[in-house]
Image (cartoon, rainbow, N blue to C red; front, side, top):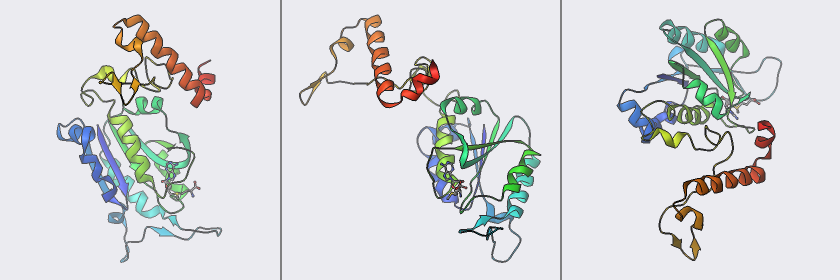
Length: 234
Ligand code: SAM
């Protein structure tokens, strides 16, 4: 999978060289391109923003550099491509969305700053490629970079060969075997630590009982913390 990030803060993407995503890049499972939006400016000051038309506070990202960036990046547009525009006014990012996006050949993240990107860029991009406006959650970040990083990690870990044991992707919160429940509590050794014991059933070796206990725990935790998920299921 090819992953491109258009940003005015390329340094935000240095963590992509770490951990599983870094290893995926090293082994060629993903290819990463970080692009400075200012490379597509045409004025001396490399300006990427201007005042909002109609008035109001803050600045808006100008359409011209974004238009040129998209033209260049999409000139080579083989395979299934999606342009992702992180924005708090987008549809919420979910595990289901991560699964869907993991099936693409190329994802391009357009990282906005200030009050966002001129709306005509979104409209123009739709004439070239599939566009998804996605929100990381109901809060406002300073820019799209952190959102792009979070989405990248959720998507890349689903690609074959990235997580050592693919079974561990199945029984996770919001995923396959747990059918969108939150994960049950997990423990490791020692069986007793600072006066707290691992639940007896997990030491029993009885697989069916362990599975039942985990299922009940997952349902209880989901009921307590995210009853909305249970409503969605029913
Ligand atoms: N004025 C915008 C609004 O009210 O919707 C917020 C702009 S925000 C300060 C600047 C940029 O941060 C956005 O263009 C977007 O790229 C990114 N951003 C902020 N919050 C986000 C979120 N919850 N999810 C995804 N991207 C976000």
